[in-house]
Length: 338
Image (tube, rainbow, N blue to C red):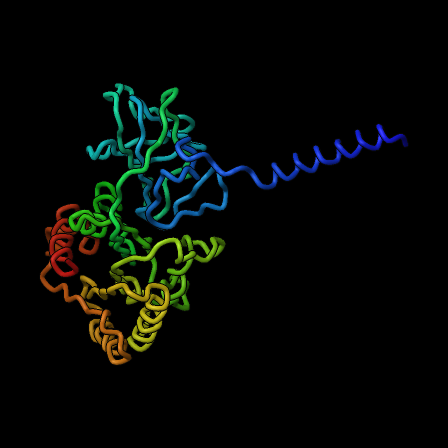
């Protein structure tokens, strides 16, 4: 082989290696380009971000916030999904079974800088459609911008009640979302219907363990708690445990374990253990809080809820609050956690 041939061969190998490296390690998104990894887009709740071009929300109530210039904004959705959007702090607009490029501004906005919030609709705890956020499309020459977001984050841990099951807009009209908004705080809801605190023998998923995952499914990765720290954790669990024959001793032990594990992840957060609205496991919940207080954790508190709602008028079925019930709970809870 001649020197010239060797040189050309070497250049070919280098070119191929460079191409392979580029495919395996794609370049980071440019700030302002509207792709999911654009640093101007802020994500609240637990999002699976392992795929750089497609972010997937876990649990309920996850949402994205961004600012943008120009007069139009469109969403990139992989396939059909139900979602809600709010532009410039306006009312949430519902979209059903939309996919591809979704035009959010059929009427152009005034020139300037705007804000967008996006949340996906859940139905009985499962996202309704293909909840894959692939970024936004803006006007030619427009770009995303960083927006001011609250530094305080409140996390709500619960079941269908916290998820907003049977309320008009699910998580968006549930007490957790409403409470945090009243406080001017960001929020995350680690909640799904049909979950228990204790992992029962007949298959009820136990939040004692599953809370620490990115999503409900065991296949999702463990959540990386270094992504953010919350100021408050509000727990409302136990409504389903009774129906799955969880004993008082099992419930109390699981509650203590959950409180210990949460404290390890959030060293400085105030933790509020709500009395469930059915008033079940009251003694056990109080005992779990007392155990943590006795261990020196003074930031764990019990929240009594008697009289907060009337099941006859404030629930859809005797258990799940309606919109009015959630508003009542939010008003009481916001006053408690301040």
